[in-house]
Image (spheres, rainbow, N blue to C red):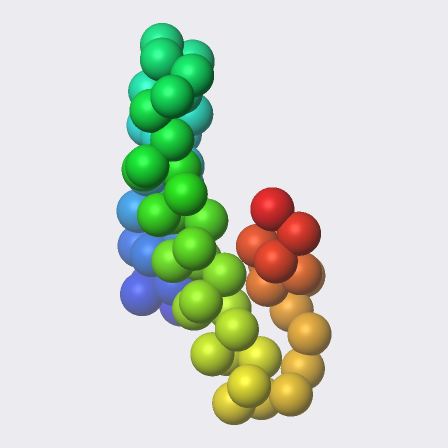
Length: 63
């Protein structure tokens, strides 16, 4: 749905901007770590509620 699309674009933007910042300074990983933690947390909560593995959640966990 639309909320999922907006959330996906937002997290994608944060991940891309975090990667840009890391490419300029290898020690500037705070935004990238926050984005990965946030996405893994959201997918973990969704997994706990539904007990179904989602491909996006699997990728977030592996990341």
